[in-house]
Image (cartoon, rainbow, N blue to C red; front, side):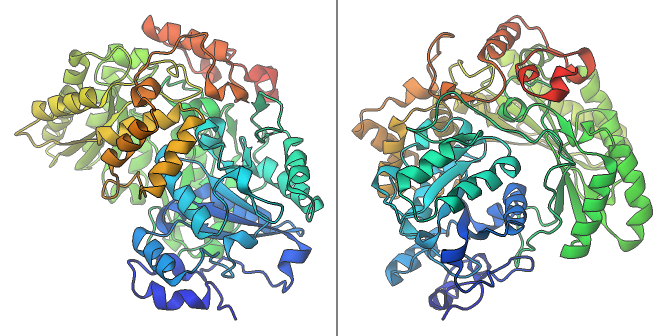
Length: 594
């Protein structure tokens, strides 16, 4: 017999491991099937997130897909997350498979497994999930009775390093594609594996290696208000990273930052209306009991009805003590004024991302933030009473010089000075992330800074602010380098991932688990040159592994943006300065009518 939420065999284990709430299940809003013959009557999918529970439960995409699939009478959905190292060891010792949280079904019993590919350093966790779930790791080793393993998320748009493990990839907005792919799997239930994959390859927005024509085009929902809107969410049974209800208010961004993959692959901009967002907020708060709501998008402060929504919430929800948070703030006084109206935002500090230390380099990366914007924003922050500011920068950007690095320290010192002018405490922290060239961006051809270069640049800036009130940290260069290898990798990296995992690589995105020496031993043993992937300048006409995917933005536009970058020229926001002809005018009604 299965206990609700988890296999009875797990209970002795979870009392011996760290954070047992990760594995207990039974949360409010989760829905075990009431169909005793589920496997025969419906198509079943397990949404498997390749990180721990508290990370996966904070990912809105799975919450949306979970709610969506529950509305389909021919499909059933359950969840699994990657167990932490202690739980993995306990499961292997007890010879127990990875099971879903809802009913405790082994992953091998599902028709399909959906995995989000949000971060390159989660690759080995994918193999842990499949192996513990009793699913053959290589797609070529799976038979007719094994699940179809499907990848989605931003990593699906550069799938080559993971192709040997996945049967298919979902490109773009899952809300539009998932019902069709589940319909295809339902109609081919019991058929040969090849027939099922061929059915998936016929769906626009799906890429099935060996079956799909290329390039396979990313699929989008153009009318967000007319598409699926989740009215329920699973409420976690332990603290998670983003412990609140969440609503997506828009998709896409046309600010055109040349380093930003999300700003390219999530185009075009599509906004939701005030009425539908307001109603969804009311429904979610009523269902979940949360007292905080987050408005999500790539640039929430650009969402047109934002000010009107704040007025609505202050009238209708203020008496209930509901708080609102904005996950991203532009570096301008308008954003600070908005934050000042939100009690949730006043509890801590504010975070901004100048990205680069000089106006010259910000022009290169098309970051429309001037020195005047920075100073006025900092003044507004401390004038409104905040004491803490966090600043995000990148190091290793194309054309970067040490003068640009000096500018990072200068901005941090200007923040200290602004706090002093307004008689605030002025807790200033700065974070430096190594720049990683990403597929489908104007910088996809650029060489990434080496590990030694990143380490030296991080130390250089840290020395500039030494003995000051500024707290500065920089990301581990070895992790940044590995991320760069896989961000623009080819199929050979699948073998490297498999070998690293077999040697013990786990949770590579977690600094306490990451073992750089293990990875470089694997590259050496497989005769793969990591610098060839990360630190090599690519030719503009060089075939790239991700050319098989059409994101909607043309390669010609990316190359033109690269040329403008090296000329120090900026490109305007097409919502304000006119269409920039990025490629979406071929497909999207909103762009064709611009």
